[in-house]
Length: 214
Image (cartoon, rainbow, N blue to C red; front, top):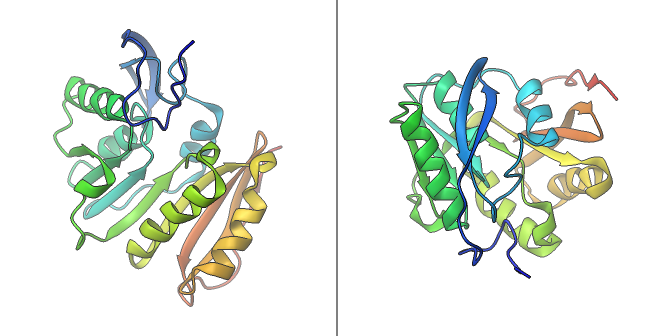
């Protein structure tokens, strides 16, 4: 039995490519997936909730998909902002290969699918969209968010989707308590998931309307 996780660096299972029809950025497209990555059989519910809740991404600058899997978030960012540079980051080499294949198939030349250490240290992000790998464990998750969320550019937002029963509310409280310059607010609730909006303190004026769809 394979012990692969979607956060394994190099899945040991055989890479069996499958074709998956999906709708991204309002377009019906075909992508490829494989076992050993997150949600290879479908566009997962959390990512669908995220993509249905966020505003359009900035038209330019550096945009980040943190924990890209086979690429649905990164591909959406690239389709919606063709002049932006999209960083699709994952520790899973198979996920990165699939994201590169899918970007190439869709004719997207603005996607960089790379390991975390391959993103230049001086890059800051106009937005971060992420369905973060909650099951990697709280310590690893917190370390990851400590490293990436502070790289938001001024007056820019991060959008995180987290299942309510996997700690969305406690993660929101942790961000507020532990990341000094950042504030998290709930922006949407749908299908058992929370979408959190993260921004620098003082940059959010007034309450964010919450979309309640449960």
